[in-house]
Image (cartoon, rainbow, N blue to C red; front, side, top):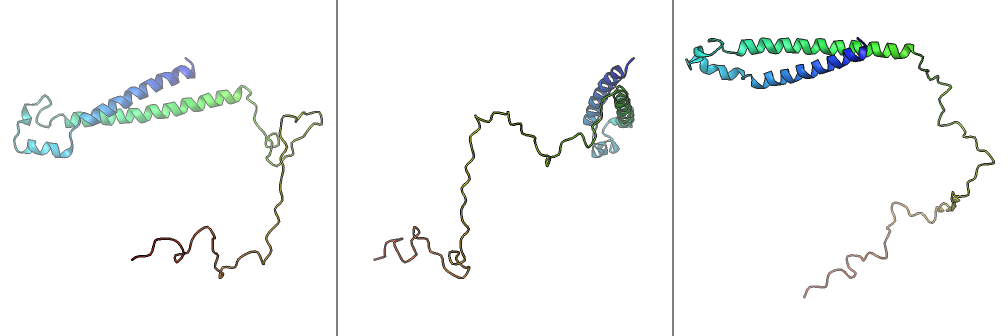
Amino acid sequence: MGIETIELVLRVALVIDALGLIALIMIQQGKGASVGAAFGSGASQTMFGSAGASSFLTTLTTWLAVAFFVITFALAWAARERAETLGSIGIPELREEDTPSAFDEIPVDDTMDFGDVPELSVEVVPAPQDSEVPSADSEVSDPEVPDAGQGGAPPRS
C-alpha cells in the first residue's frame, strides 16, 4: 500500500471524525441544563440512568478528539514521507546564483524588432525659481474662487 493510499484513507477518516465531533458537540446540553435533574424532573427514567447521557457523550467526545489528533499526526507523517520520496527522485534544487536578480541587466539583441512598441517621449519641466514659489506666510488667492465679500449670496434687504 503506497503513501498516497494511506493519505487518502487518513483524510477520509479525518473528515468522518470531524463530522462526528461536530455532531456530538451540537447534541450535548450545556452545564446549566442538568440543574432541573437535581430537583426531580424525572431524569431517572432515561436510557442512561439518573446521570443521563452526559457522561457517555463526554467520554465519546473525548475519544473522538484523541482520534482526531492521532489522525492529524499520521497525516503529517505521511506528508513528510511523501516529501522525502520526492526529494530522493532527483528534483533539481535552485541555487542562488541560478535565480535572476531584479538588478541584473537584460541582454538586448540588435536583431530584436521593437517596431510595434511606441516610443516614449519625455518632457522636461524646469523647476520653479525661488521667486515663483509662494512662501507659507503669503496669501494665495485663486482667481476662480470668489472671496466672501465678492459675489456669493445676494445682500439681505
